[in-house]
Image (cartoon, rainbow, N blue to C red):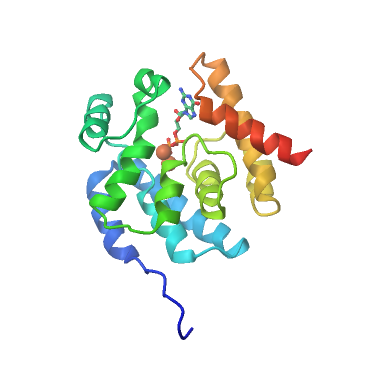
Length: 198
Ligand code: DGI
Ligand code: FE
Ligand code: FE
């Protein structure tokens, strides 16, 4: 519209080609699944389609890195590393990925960067694009069968916050069963959305 600043449109084909070269075949298939699922959710919840798909394509762009590489990149880019992240460096693929999205893929929209930062643990009071990416990452068609996945997939298109709670509950249960350390942010996000339901 006249006078309105136009949001940047990202070249999805170009990003897809670049990211394909960086990721394993199965990670690339997952990435495409997240991208198209994020697009479908953006249609349902009236979010920006191009930005949802850009976030989907780039969300795991640092997933190919080893723990060492992730930690080195945090040093290089002055990314804060929490005690939990130091013990579980894989968590850092979200923050490092967001940094790469900005530096190497020239993403300059905060909604996309924020969605990538928060896609693994979530965050209390997320924006619609954050939630869409978080949910799409879990429900995309290539995911290994997970408990209650059919119910969560359906709920994602009915009530996004309810789907979020179901995913966070399942993730916390899984982490507990595996005796993995629970990141504060994962717990805080769950507590926030559960108390919102009441
Ligand atoms: O990168 P993806 O595999 O597509 O998915 P993701 O970014 O959600 O990462 C999933 C991994 O993150 C999975 O191995 C569990 C882990 N994770 C998520 N929340 C926490 C966590 N790991 C720990 N230790 N603590 C958490 O709170
Ligand atoms: Fe991820
Ligand atoms: Fe992912």
